Amino acid sequence: GFKMGIVGLPNVGKSTLFNALTRTAAAQAANFPFCTIEPNVGEVAVPDARLDRLAEIAKSKSIIPTRMTFVDIAGLVKGASKGEGLGNQFLANIREVDAIAHVLRCFEDGDVTHVEGRVDPVADAETIETELMLADLESIERRLQNIVRKVRGGDKEAVQQERLLNEARAVLEAGQPARTVDVADEDAKAWGMLQLLTSKPVLFVSNVAEDEASQGNAQSARVAEMAAAQGAASVVISAKIEEEISQLEPDEAEMFLEELGLAEAGLDRLIRAGYELLNLQTYFTAGPKEARAWTIPAGTRAPQAAGVIHGDFEKGFIRAETIGYEDYITLGGEQPCKDAGKMRAEGKTYVVKDGDVLHFLFNN
Ligand code: GDP
Image (cartoon, rainbow, N blue to C red; front, side, top):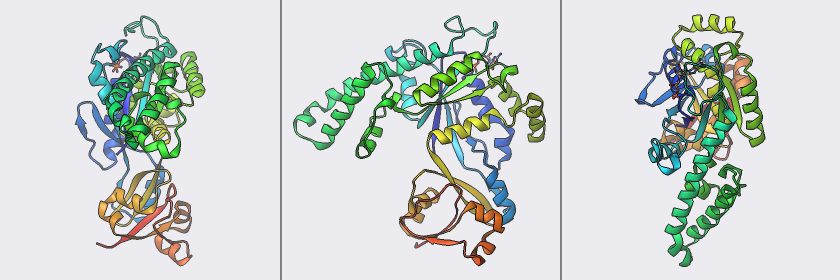
């Protein structure tokens, strides 16, 4: 599955947000057991109204949303790259995630200490980014040293690595995160394996006060501007409110959201933003037993999409019976689509589209 790491300075609202994400009644009602894998790791359902509509038409007994994993990565402080705070452990945790949700404190509250004694989310973002860039520079030096002999020996992979490490170093030394390096397609895999912290996509999360949840405030506006300038995404959320909502039953939660002037829970927006950030898509399987959503990276071909369900589906892949989501809904299910010639047999090179309703045929 895909993993997002929640990072930020102490006292910005990371844990509050994590708890809200993983304890929400909606996540639990969504018919998969919410599981805390470790105290700081949780899985959440990706909200998708299309799945409910499919289930209704297919008369599915159960509905199984696709999931995303969140990791609360505490312990980043100024000096982390030099081993301050949880230092290295923190950095190791970040290496394992696919993307970063960077929580920034945009709320004023005299009772909650700010580590720097003032509310300035843009400066806070820079503090964290600097630590990550320093950590990247250090690991680049280490790796360059480790591959010196192989490079001399003419090892092709090592030569490619060295070239990429040098490109990353140049960008970092100029004060830019590694994600600003323009990576060629043929280098993408080797680049990913470098696992540089600042090469991961970032979603800035502006945590605002309870009464600012719908509009944001001057600080969250600054964050949005900064994010846009970096080509990063941003969302406004009030972690405190999300925590309250997470303890309500779904219909109560809806009323509460209406009172606050919010169209949907901030968490739903956050989860979807993460999904977009990672360039992920959803396809569906639907039948009387269950309607289920599955996550794939955009551009995935049918056999690899089948492999998300089970490795055997990919190995023995024959074809995918495919119905577009809109057809499925407008015509009213699989049989009517078949009758209308809207069910296509797609082969190994088919690139799955977001919302496709698929049925895989495979050899055992
Ligand atoms: P972490 O150190 O980043 O994990 O921060 P926590 O989630 O533990 O939050 C630190 C403190 O800030 C707690 O007392 C929270 O209740 C409080 N807090 C978090 N979000 C908000 C918010 O949106 N508004 C207010 N007023 N307080 C908040």
